Amino acid sequence: MTERATELFQRLHLDEAGATPLVGTPSQIWVISTLEIPLRSDNDVYLAVQLSSYALKNQPLAPSHQEGYWAPPFVAYPVPISYSAPTKLNSLKKLVAKAVPRATLKRDIEQLAYRLGLRDITLVKQPAFVEIKMSPRSPGIIKSYIVERFTLSDVSEECLNNLSDSEGLFGYSYLPIDRDIEKSDVTEIFSVSHQRTEMWHLGKPIQSNLEHVITDERSRKQLVSNAITLQFDDFLHRETGIILSCDLARSATAVRRAHSLGGYFGDGTEVAWDVMRRITLVLHQFVARLGTTQVQFAGDGLVAAIPDRKSDGKVDQVALILLAWQEALNKIEQIGRDISEGVNLLGSRLAVHYGTYAFGRTAGPHSVAATFDGEVVTEVVRYEQGLRDCDEGSEEEPRHIGLFSDTLNAELPENWLSTQQSVMNSRVISVRSKEFEGGGVFFQFQPVWESSV
Image (tube, rainbow, N blue to C red; front, top):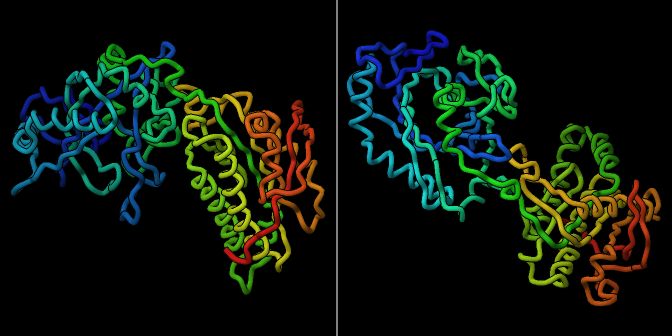
């Protein structure tokens, strides 16, 4: 049965009459071989999707939303057009069969699964279909897409972490498929560029072939019946290790100061953006120096963790933290002086703690990003917030201060912190923030800032 959303969109099943005319003459033909990965978690079923491409730049015609499209993982094959483009379904099928043999489809989809870290897989071939439509990325071009579908129905248990993508590094999002669409997190928005209503998930549109699969009752039931079960804990790491929270003091003041530097130095807004960019760069370089991807940024601060399993030992790890943060402070000092006529404008707070936490998709398949969870995470943030009351520096000269919690100090040699050349004025204190109260060793960083970055 033919489905038409507009005169520029057509969906055909391959078992339809060969004489069925195509709604438009395609300028390109593509075979899209998709790897459908249905997952079951807590009695709900989801389909793993990825961003197929960011929106292309400098297109004569482009979607006004400037977003890429969600799609299953896939392999794409261009099909050559010789003297003229096909106008009927039968001639389109002949071109495709000649260009892309069945054996090639299966071999390449198995290679794609291997590339995604999946072993000992079972694939179920699903019915293919054809779409004639405006190109999602280049709406001025009519293309034909033959969608070949493979569903993953089984995989070695050793590979389940490659399906849960706990840190989001594969870029998976999990689209709910076993409930009514209107009751899920999917919305519908009309596309002026494509002249059809598109489905959206987490602020990005869904490719029309994926939309068909999750809304067609038969296809959806097939996916649900083949879903691979994941436990909630598959979506995150439960760790024990060092966790830190840091924040820059008076960064808002620095940005306001940067805004006032318009004129000779250029537009004030651009100067402010440059200051914020430089601060952000320093924070990211600090995390890279620590060698961890377990991090959560928030404006001019962050929370990061280094699990014991990846550390050379607690002493070496905290020594690296002190070194890396002092390197970052050298750059922070220079930024502050650049916008305040040589006066120290920016300060900082660093709290370092130790304990058990969780990192990853802490809301399971509903997570939109990897985050932290656990009591120790709240505690380290409260430690850092409580340091504000310990900053005795003047309004003109804020300080760079830090704190090692009692819990962390218990993991280190006695009085280890006081022996470090990078710190001074260390003393035992108790800090309070909201309902939290905790003890630790307060210190200042030695003012050995470099004169330039």
